[in-house]
Amino acid sequence: MRIEPRLGAYVEDWRRSGSPELLLSLMSYADGDLSEGLFDGLLEMRLLVEAETARLAARRRSAEQLEELGRVLAREVLAAGERDPAAVALLDYDFHLSVALASGNDVYPLLLNSFRRVYLRILERFYADPGLVPQVFAYHRALVDALAARDEAASRAKMIEILEFGERNLRRIMSLERDAGRKR
Image (cartoon, helix red, strand yellow):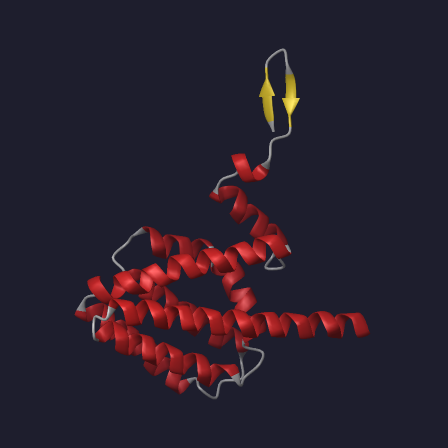
C-alpha cells in the first residue's frame, strides 16, 4: 500500500513493489504450502542460482570446502537406508549449502538460508519416497567429482540434473498427494 498525502491510499502490485522480505513473509505464512505461481517461481529461481553456484564452486572452492563436501557425502552414505525424511532433507540441505559456500559468493548461502524452512518442508515430502534417496545421493557424488576436477561446465550441468530430477519427482509426489486428497 502506498499513501499519498491529500490524494489517498493506493494498493500496489506486490510484484512491482515487493521485496525479499515480502517473499519470505509469504513463504512463512504458507509454511511451505506455496501457491502454484510462487512454487514455480521458486523452482525456476533455484535452477538459475544453483547452477551458477555450482559453476563458481568448481572455480573457487578451496581444499577445505571440498573436504567438507566429502564429509557431507560420507554422512549421506551412512544415511542411505534412513527412513526419516526430515533427517534426509537436512542432509540434502547441508549438501546444497556447502556448494553455495564453496562458490565464494556470500549472497548465495544467504539466499539458500532464507528459504531454509520452506526448503526443508518441501524436501520432507520429497524424501517420503525412500527410493529417491540413493538416486539423489549418487547425483551429489557426481557433482562433487566435477567440483574436485574444477570442471565448471560439468558442475553446472550436474547441478541442473540434480534440480531437474528433483523437480520431476516433487511434482509427481505432489500430484499423488492431490489425488489422494480428492479421494478422501
